[in-house]
Image (cartoon, one colour):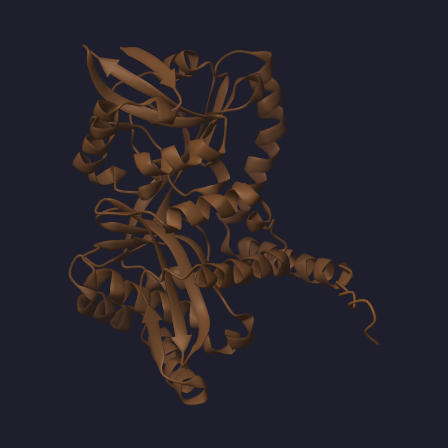
Length: 372
């Protein structure tokens, strides 16, 4: 096999068409983070984005989008920002991971959301984890029947809160594919607030991420697009979500809600209405992403799997990288695999977020000159 490394923007029309052909042909690649449109958008904002073009017998057999950082450190495309990575290739492509790293000029490659079962990465998988799905292939009514039968108490509670929210604040409705930029700013403001309150890093404090989201929001084609959904009570937005879709799958990315309405559980209410609209628009599933959130457990009616692992070639860089990452990864896996520890860690992060918010100095607006 021959491997050529280029920037995504250097791909020609035949390569772009081949990428889409390979992705569409394999159901395991049905994820917008594996779409060529996402790779092109990210490469316009980040100089370290590359794609390996894999040829076999003179024909393109696959693509690997990735990030090449200093000292030969490789990361999947989008790294910590995305929820799916992988080779976009013919099914069962037999290609040594270390040979691929050598061709890409990489010493080490960590992954934690790889499409599970790809032959290149399987020997290097350290864990395989489930990703909860809202499977809508049988229609929304069949999905709701499943949820009602398997989580009757939770379902009744959500419906009760939905009626109460409507009585208190007005009719409940969901806007699908909201195009108003102000709606996006409302959602990202909620999400930034959530990051701070829960002790996480605010992703929207980075301008390039805001630009990426805006560009994805403007994308619309049969096989790829950004979907902004907003839940309203009367004329008041109470919850929302921005994700990406293929022709069949909507992937969860940035869900958030107005904390003033937290007692109504607007996030779960929004997810159910979003799934209903997704089904009515011909989508077959909503990928909620791996993670320990309890609401995903009872909203799901199916799973797929992603893997975690590490590939390295003998080098000083790989050794130093392993020493820095191994303890962190081991600790994280221990927490993720134990629900009680996950809940404790979540509470600690939220406590840290409250303290950090309290200690931040308030912004004082200056009065215009001459005003008393």
